[in-house]
Image (cartoon, rainbow, N blue to C red; front, side):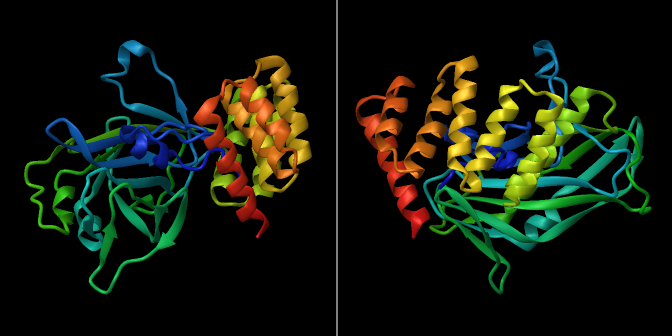
Length: 334
C-alpha cells in the first residue's frame, strides 16, 4: 500500500505511547489525554482540531501554554475535531459508545467570553485494522469491541447554540474527559478502577483568513492533507500543486506531491520528484523508503534495494522492508 502522507493527526497522537512510527505522516499537531496504571499506558484518548495547522510556541511555554492551531478562514459554521481512542492494554475492551458520547463535554471561549456550544457526533466511527482505518459501527446495545492495539476515531463538530458562525478570532476549547473511563469495560472482568487519567484537554483555534504567502501556502497544504485523508488524491494533488506555486523550491511540498503521485499510480513522476529532493536534502530514511516503494511499483526492485542500502537499511531491517514492499505491491496488483 502506498504510504498515506498526512493520514490523521489523531492516529499519530494516540499511538505515540506505543512507539508506533508511522512513516510519511504530516503532523499537524494534536493534544490528548491518557489513562495509565502503574506508569504503563493502557488506554489513550486524543482530541485534536481538524483542518488546521499547529502554531509552534517557545519551548519554555510547552508545559503551560495550550496548543494553538490556525484555521485559514474568515469564519466557519463549526469547529471540526477528531476524537481518538487506542487500547494499549493486553485485554480486549468493550466501549459503550452511547455512554461515551454523553460523558464528553466541551466549553468554548472567545477571549474571556464563554460561548454556548454543542457537540455533533458524526454517524460513523473508524477502527484501525492492521495498517489502515475502516468504517465500523456499533452493535444493538451500542457496544464496540476494541482489541489490544486497536484504535478508534470519530469526527466531531462544535457548533454555537445560537447558530452564529465562529467569526474571525481566537477560540479556546476545553474538552472534559472526567468520567470517560466509565464507558469502558474489560472483557475478562479486569477492574479499571485503578486507572488514572488527565481529566481535561484544551487547545486554541485561531480563525483568520490567509494574509501572507506563508499563510496561503499553509492553507493549500492543509486542504491537501484533508483531501488525502479522505482518499480524494486528485484533490490533494491539486492543493499541493497550488502550494508549490507559492513556494517552488520547498522540498516538503514536493514530498507531499510525490506521495500524491504514488497514490494516483504515477510512480515515474514520484521517482523524478524524489530524486530532485534527494539532490538538495540528501537521502534520508523517509525519502529512501518512499523512493524504494516507487521503484518496486515499476518493477525495479534492484534500484529499490540500492536506495534503501544508501539510506542506511541493512541486514534484517533491509530484508523486512523489501519484503513488506513486495507484499504491498502484490496486493495492489490483485
